[in-house]
Amino acid sequence: MIEVDYAVIGLGAVGSAALYFLSKNGSNVLGIDRFDPPHSMGSSHGETRITRLAVGEGQEYVQFAKRSQQIWRELEQLTQEDLFRQVGGILIESGEQPWVKYGGSSFFDKTCTYADSESIPHEILRQGDLTKRFPAFETGSKARAYFEPSAGYVFPEKIIRSQLDLAAKNGAKIRVHQPVQAIRQREGWVEIQLREESIRAKKVLISAGGWVKDFLDENEKPKFKICRQVLHWVKLEKGGPMESIKSVFMWGYGQEPTDFLYGFPSLDGETIKVATEQFDEIPHPSFLDRTISKEEQQRFLSAKINGKFHGLLPEIERSEVCFYTVTEDAKFVVKSHPEMNQVLLVSACSGHGFKHASALGEHLASKLEEG
Image (tube, rainbow, N blue to C red; front, side, top):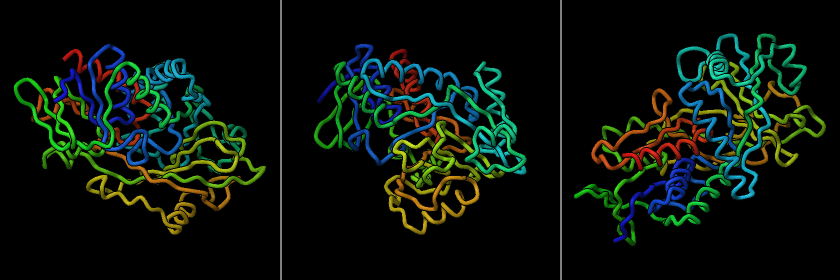
């Protein structure tokens, strides 16, 4: 049986960061994953993720978004990898009614409020200025926009790989393709049973994303909702206005949470990645349908793309499936396991986690060490 100070179960966005920071501090630490991260089975793949500082999801997350951007720059220095492109980001609200993402007031208004209170540089654009600066968007006369120069996008797979490589370099042990068979706390240790070995740790972090349900009882499982998401790479019209898009964008065009699009500048000169959000629940990641039919792609084009952009062709080059783990209020869950006080749980980043993940991992590493 292997004995370690800390074990991290789940090595995605948050887990890989926690493993890195624990190893950086000289701890005897071991990381475990049921797959071989970075992989395409969870919530942290698909080429790019948006980062922004004025996060309308909650002012309490601004500190994590700011710190994560600092960490990515530090990782770039250590690895010589291109991880974070600070190209600016635009948030558009164009509906007849305010776009409400997680209940309460306008997501746009909350973003502006947090930007002001946190001294985040930004501009507010009305429809005329918006059209001049971003002619690719067909926003309508009621549109308003928030532009944040410090926003941009990151490469999630490269960040996870960098954090894991640095953790291993610091001496962390890593076990991949190893689902946890059992976990229990006794006699001052947390015992973890894998397929081929047993591990004892003084403290454990479970950062398993949607697989958090495997570590909870029937009363806790319903608090974590698994929602299938689809990312699409839509073809660009040669010479069209979308070719000039250099910033990330988010666009709420109605009142419902699903009246929403987000996208990225083209990385290949041929396509632009665009997606929406869906909140139909599946019981567990193992039930996730990873196939995307031509009919599903066509529905996306018809409902989400047609009439909204100048310079996109009605053709999808490729699509990928991932999922969100969502709580009712879309807040992160960070708490002790209800039955094991030496085990810390983190999950349900609710579709807005990667921009915070590296700083959240650093924070959780500190909590384990302090506790």
